[in-house]
Length: 495
Image (cartoon, rainbow, N blue to C red; front, side, top):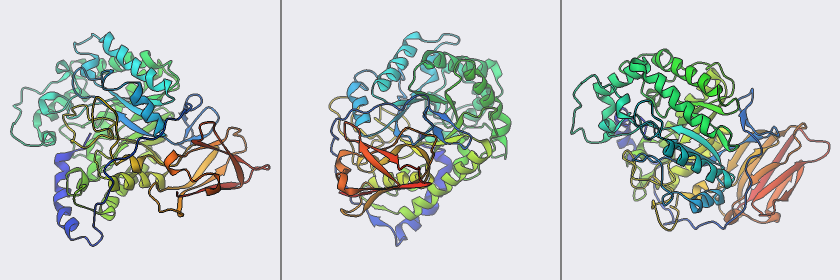
């Protein structure tokens, strides 16, 4: 989490004065805590979710799938949350918020603590978590997580035996851990990895295959995020360095995964320099069932210029984050496949959460919030998690007010536009969806409506179709008229 923080400092400093002087900046006003939603029974997305030729996630019925969820990543040994830190109550609350996906992180150092020895206990706990989430109807994206590679630079990820720092001294006293991305010793270690020195890529591929083999038969496994926020090495400023160094490793990983799982989506990530606006040069991976995993953070929020007890400007943050989304859209056009905003947030600021969720709606892209719980994150912030305590009674931060929203989980066709405002004033339109219908899809469009945002049937208007409700009342099931119209729309009034 927290992309290229040291290299983003210049942007934060440059915008700081503008943020203070900005006429659009407004004091933050938000509730102290979101209420726990009522329990509801949901069902998993039917069948495997794959990427179609147009880059949309589709279920077994051919419906467009929109993903909303959270990250679950534990960066401290033993590198997976214990049953006290994540159990059935957590999975139930994630489900009851209407979320349908968890990006579940594993750490290579926990998976393979000694070279060539996969920890069977670690794999068993990972599978246990996948199954727990599956039992609650939640898809899982397996994420090989790292931040600045290893603990010696203040992060986590690679086991000690897989780190070759060249014997270069590691500077200390730099302050924030993120400044370590400027350490030549770290660059050397990434150079060694991408070049497969000491057979490091060989071992990484084998480690990934051990994970895929353990979970590939689980129906709720969406896919595999190859490597979180990779660094391209010492030549990070060169155009195309990601294509030269990272691309061959990504292609090799994709082939290795396909040897075991022919259905799971292979998620690739751009290198951290893309957060500076350089743009990725990763090309097609030789596989069509792929998607980009990308992260969007507003630096002014990330580094405390905008905060709960201060000011916020959706214009300044929106400009930065829109640019990042535009870069991801270009990646999608170049590489092919789908996309998913797998990290955003890491703040208690409701306005920031609402802004990024709205930007995602505008781009018709799904998301996973960072993070469910902090879990003593060495590279995180105290208020980054949706649930403020790692153990004990569950509660939610106010950011849940922006994330628990009405949204189309599946669309029997292709969405054209989407708007959802969980904090709209009473009587206003809080949700609006327009989509083109696909007559070949017989399953209904399913729209999730949280109980606190449900206006009752009188507040729902469907043009071009009709609706019923699931037994739990939380899913609106929209069916087109006969004959099937070209376009349908659904409008829901704010309560």
